[in-house]
Every structure is written in C-alpha cells, then in structure tokens.
Length: 250
Length: 69
Image 1 (cartoon, one colour):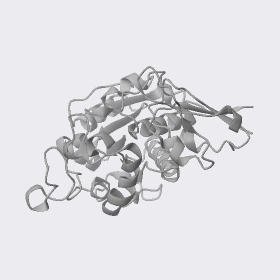
Image 2 (tube, rainbow over the protein chains, first blue to last red):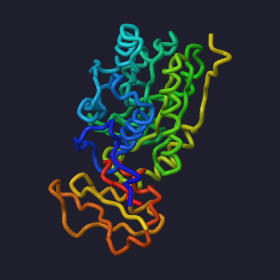
Image 3 (cartoon, rainbow over the protein chains, first blue to last red):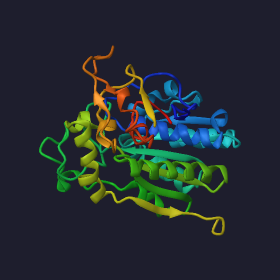
C-alpha cells in the first residue's frame, strides 16, 4: 500500500487555530499543495493580512511579513520590487481586503504589480466577532447589523473579483468556492494558475475564495457549506473574470 | 483496497469527511481527543469498501487525513 495523500510538505506540523469546519484550513492546504507542485516553497514570501489569516507564519515554513491592517498589497509591492526573483503572495480576508485595504488592493492591481492575492471572502469580520463587512449579504444578520443588512443604510455587498477585473493591470481575476470536493478541485487549479501568472511575469493575479465562518454565522459547519451554495453563490457568481494571455501582454 | 488514517489529535469533528465520503464509511469516535472534540474515525474492518478516492482528505480543513491505496 502506498500513501497517495498526505499533509503537504509546504505546511508545518502545527495544528491550525481555526474553528472546526473553517474553510481557511482548506485554502491553506491548497496553497501549500500548489507550492509543493511548483517547487517554489524555498523561494516564496507570504504576506497575510490581519484577521484569522494572521498566523500564516505558524503554518507555512516560509518567510512571512506581517502587514498592518489592509496594507498587505502595499507591503507585497515593496517586497516584490526589492526581490523580484521571489514569489510573493498575499493572503487576506474580506474585512482586510475589501474594507480597510480597498485602496491598497485597487492601486496595487492598477499598477499591475506582479503579485498574487488570495482573498478569503466569508462575508463577515471573523476574528473580531462577526461584525458586518462590505461583503456581508443583504439581509444577513451580524453583530453590527442585528436586523439584517439593509442597502439603504449600509449599501450593497461589494464584488471584488469583478471590480478588479475591470482594471488594466490585472492579469488574472477569478472567484472560486470551497464548499464541495468539486469546487475545491477547481480552486486548486485557480491557485496554481495564479502562481503561474506571477512566475511568468504576467502581472497582478487575484483568487477570491468563498469561504465559511460558521461560528459567526451561528450555524453548524455542514449548514455553512450549504449557505455558500444557496446564499453566497447566487450573489457572488463563480468564474474567471479576467485572464491575460501571452498575446495581450503589454 | 484502501484505507485512511485520521490523526485524531488534529481532527476537530467538523463532519466534512463523513458528509462527503461516497461510501459512508467514516464515523464519529465515541471518545474525545485532547482538544475535547469528538474526532472522525475510520473503522479498519471497512478497508474493503474504501476506494481511496481522497474526497475526505481533499475536504479536511485540518489536514488530518492520510490516504493509503
């Protein structure tokens, strides 16, 4: 009998601090698996945002730079420009990327910085206790929108993958989900594509992953997977919104 | 002929592997682990039923499953 599936080499032995059933763990594993496949572990620098993703340095045996809240794309810009031969990836949540760091990510994308961003969209601020984020769905109850999000006072949920796809500097913008084996496989392909875009010098790549936060959604882990399917995907459609090929490279 | 090994100290009992196992082999343990969670368990007598499809491992958020075939 041969071992056909094991913990990726690009992860340390540390147990994750995530809640039971949090798909952050799946996202971590996908990134580590792709780093194994591409053989870039020793050459990669990770930059997590602030939130549940902040302990990236515990789980990946790579160099990690901690950025102030929302500023990870700006730090990644500096890191990639200082060390252009390194693979630089950013791992941010939705409160970090879509609220506090909107300016940084939009300008990094517009400049076409050659970095990769993994954007975990679970529609709430997870670590701080489930407050409303810009990605919170209409009608969704959070600790700061106890009657459900109302567009008249809080606006509409923001679709970052589509927004960034409109910018000229973006090479790859896609949205995937992590709620079923089929979608996890699609997500792995997207992660690989995003890393390859950076390795080929194509420019800014972003993978938005629809993720769960069952603790703050106040549902069970399995119900949270169904919430992605039934509530998030209708508003956040999956797909590739922009993919630059060699021909149209500026 | 295949089997999986679940690291019971990593498992947090989220039921993802149980939900997605196409053969419905995996069960929840009757004893809790050091973290206080009731981990998933693979009954070794069901080795014949397991096809080694890796679905459980690909959904495990805690990287607790190894698959042998």
